[in-house]
Length: 95
Image (tube, rainbow, N blue to C red):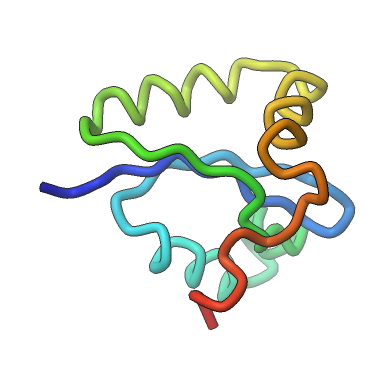
């Protein structure tokens, strides 16, 4: 069985990106390799600051859509409850 992840990445200036994937390490690598034509590349959004794990892809997609509808303040509160320092949760596992 495969896990699915809803994740939030951020730039140093806290521009946010919310996504869903079944391979979080690969997806983070892609964000870090993004060129300047993509949103994540232009804004240097490459630090994993929040994630949730799901067994069912439909649940993960529903949660991603829910988070994307939230206002910025609510998203920041969610991140800061779990990761108040906004540290990169993937540090050490994605080069």
